[in-house]
Image (cartoon, rainbow, N blue to C red):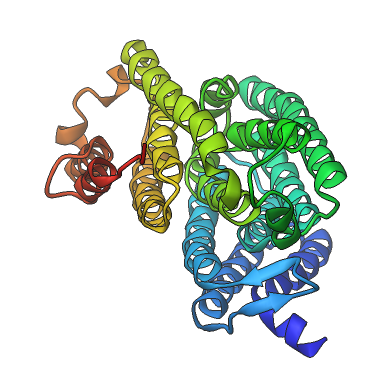
Length: 395
């Protein structure tokens, strides 16, 4: 039992911190800085535990602490920690004092930590729902704004639909494979997935595709990005997508290694559709948040191509790709969060006119992050593009 708990130290730290800070904030609702600071320390501690913690399998295979979980955990927890001061400053400027924001970030990070460490279908679903419920509330956190409330409602309704698809797919897989553990499912389909399991896998892929906003399951993304608070969008676009992509890789590579030729075709269609939708639908966007929504759809398509290769190298390329994308998108939205003109948020391309004269530092930083996401050298996005070009799809 102690060994199991030792492997779950990052998740335990986040869970205990979220509960303690929730109670503390309820009795001290004005102490937002204290709650935010302690939440950041908890996330940094969880990142350290993920980086230097032991590896192994816990809770009868439900939790896997391995190199992939540790790598993703560090990136997720640090990105979550960066979101807390950005959101705190933004809400303070709007005159909204809310201690719940850092607590919700902690709960979302806890769900993402469970996602990247999931070893069976039950842990997978619990992690996804814990993350999703926190994100629904974060999207509608700015209650005085109609667009934010609309964004939260749209995200919740469509998220519930995707969760139903995911749960139905998991139940089909369990019914035909006879187990929820990834290893047992892999043994049952080692010679390929038969019709019943294949239907369950398709539903599972569709549910996960919604979580990463892959086309044609992207319909929520532009509206939610536009309506949600800017620092929340910066958080949405980074860490949750990495967690969902790692979970995507776990399901496909650990549950269905014997059915690569079957699920690869689905992933290729998802990837190419996402790239096309993200590239062309973003051309006539004027709002920067909607523009980055379509950018995230296209970049998810590139990441899915890595998974479609069916090789360990493809997964490694996807992991590096997503971490570099987190840096770009978090940096860009950090700059966008800091911008305002006469008390009004600057979110459109027209609003950026004259920015270099007024605030040259932020203008240069936004340009660098945008060029990096575009894939131009010598920025980190060029490394992303190089990795994408080196992927090979067998057959």
